[in-house]
Length: 73
Image (cartoon, rainbow, N blue to C red):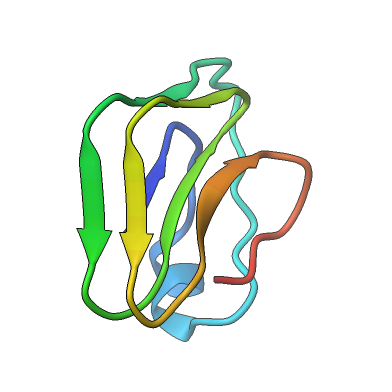
């Protein structure tokens, strides 16, 4: 699961590996609920990220990621 206010090309997403998010958006990502992934990662990616809820991933990485370069989920 990836929530982002920044752009990502379809080809980068489908290729897997490092993903470079970009774009002019200054918006942030806010989670105040519960996000659960049964497989894979849970990532919140934006210029700002606020998580007051719960992020759960049974087989991956969880966490807010403020954008400063490539993300490798």
